[in-house]
Amino acid sequence: MSDDNATVKPLDEYAEAAVQRLLTEHAQVAEQGITVVRRDHTLLLRGEVASPQRRDEILRLVTEHFPDVTIACDIGVTRAPEPSEVEELP
Amino acid sequence: MIRIAAVGDVHMDEDVLGRYRPALEHLPDRADVLLLAGDLTRHGTESEARCVAAEFGGLGVPVVTVLGNHDHHCDQVPQVVKVLSDAGITVLEGNSTVIDVGGVRLGVAGAKGFGGGFAGRCASEFGEPEMKAFVRTTGAIAERLGTALRELDCDVRVALTHYSPVPDTLAGEPLEIYPFLGSYLLGEAIDSAPTALALHGHAHLGSERGTTPGGVRVRNVAHPVIKQAYSVFHLSETELAGSSTQVSGAASGVHQ
Ligand SMILES: [Fe+2]
Ligand SMILES: [Fe+2]
Image (cartoon, rainbow over all chains, first blue to last red; front, side):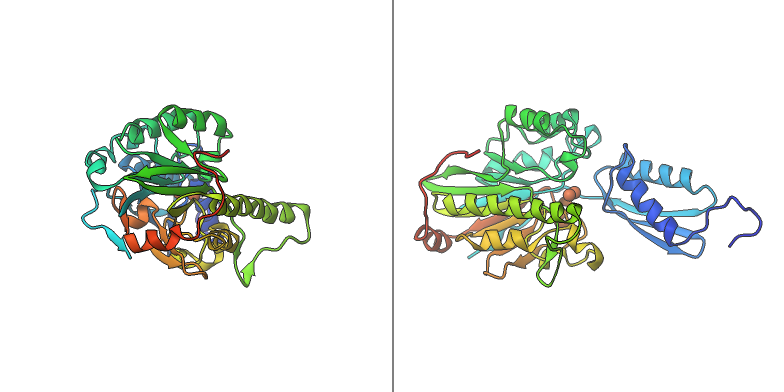
């Protein structure tokens, strides 16, 4: 537990659950595919979203809720190229 | 040969408009039909549905879809279905449609599906009313899907769901959430008819390939899984010959 600031939210399992639910249930985000990893004093966000705007919004939202936590954002935008191969199903 | 293009979990909103369009331009050269495996929108609003209609309407091939859990979030399912239907997209829920592909009748039966888990690790219709309602919901959906598949009068059958019918295609997801990602009851429904291919989405962290206990090939086509605008599957002539010997029922067209 941090002793320098009593209002700092600890980075525990509850924080992990809170982030997951925040991203799913927040009206502007509704993202279920993000993995939250706790590393010492860092929250690592991993996964893929449909647009850069969604990634930025997720980072903004989590930063806002955990202002004292270092957030590492490793969220990618899912590529959408034409398929280069087909799958033959004999 | 029937060429099936499929993608799920496109989660459209204005910020994604146009993202699939370049790849969809050549779709009619590559596929006879496009199947969408649900989670078309982020929250299931009418305005998001209009984005889906703009992106996947007027492609030059028939487009058939089921809804996903996200498409139910804002309780605007009738409006969402109407916007999609007006754009020429066929929305299935416990029913089917038959598409003529160069004289071969492709039957697609679809349902959103629901959770509950997989054999040996699944929820049971027991205890609190909420628990019973959860399991009954999946049971009722699976039953309608099975009936729709069995009653299809076609040459080749494809099952389209949002939730997964097998655990195979969930590999990559945390084991703890498997019961929220699919149900063996959907697999049982698919196995009750001579289904050639089962497509689903929902499991963004899952994997591409699986098989039902009855031997039906299952593909998870969630966009974050396939990492391309859509996947294309070729169902060969031998598959068509095999399934056409077992058709039953006399229904055709879209059943409600
Ligand atoms: Fe999804
Ligand atoms: Fe989903």
